[in-house]
Image 1 (spheres, rainbow, N blue to C red):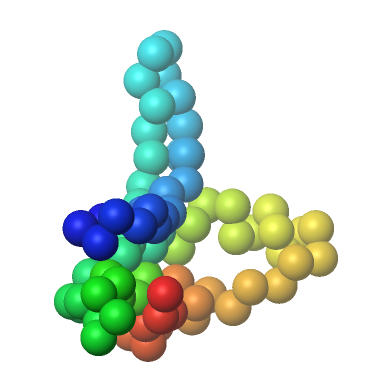
Image 2 (tube, rainbow, N blue to C red; image 1 turned 45 degrees about the vertical axis):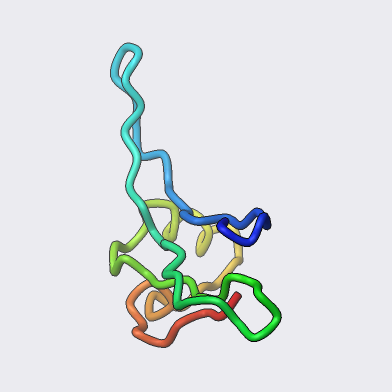
Length: 78
């Protein structure tokens, strides 16, 4: 980042592979809002509204994530 810090800026899911080409879809992205009073980059993660393919596999394993997590407009601040 411009303040010298490091941040995760995108969270993606690998959806497949054909030969040497990996297919991915972005699930969340970091939306930079600006610079805080301390000079640090501020922002939040925003969902891309794409439902990940692994959600059903998590549910079968007993991990319950609400589908709304991937649809919400409410930002996850970071």
